Image (cartoon, rainbow, N blue to C red; front, side, top):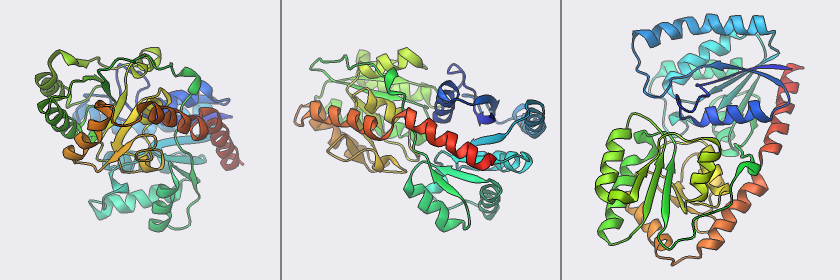
Length: 351
């Protein structure tokens, strides 16, 4: 079966995206014939006249790819966010083939729509798709209450466990890691404030940051000012380098303001990192507070520092938390099961 699948650039040097990570894994491990169609901004790309002209021609290129490749199913990856809705509503309508619409979070899962136009456009996009795929039962419930008569399926993000590296960092001075897009929505301001609180209280720790985005310069500057040479910025990493960075870390920090089910979170837990993440989106279905990690309210730097104190001072059983984090991924988020479910979806909608 021939699948046209949309995502931002799959080159990690050009893009830090959870959707791109998922799509790369699908193409690598799936048994169907995949064709990647690039849709989405690259890191640092400005919304100017050049970007606008590319969006105008996007639909024509999309239709040509479907026709020339003799595509059977179109897999559109999107998010409930303004630009994604506008772009992917057009692509969904123009596909003229069975569409699997795969929603990866977005601000409108937690916020009301900012305009009637966006809400109406999102509804039309969802109804045009043959199947809508979401990341959790929570998201399915949200979608089905807002829009009726949709075929909504749950497909939780997953990890290729055989790629994870065994944990390496066993020193007394612990290492925190952030891995992802450097954008304010990821809770970067709260990370800075929490680290400042902990350093002023005398806690000693390392912090490693990997990723790219518009907030990079400010975040790196402020973290370096707080932690000095104990802060390390490593740019964009992928593959073996990414897994080595996770294996050399102890605590994965992700206090985002908006999330679906982050692949980086699952990867960190697979590597034995203890997650400290926001209680939003589908994260609460993965992280059980005090069992395999810790949950915090988004926007709350004081709570982040509160959850980090016992982890940095060994007042909790860190080895038990690590073991539980890894076991959670092994039991529920293995990529082999993910691919089987997705291939079944393709065949159902193609028929």
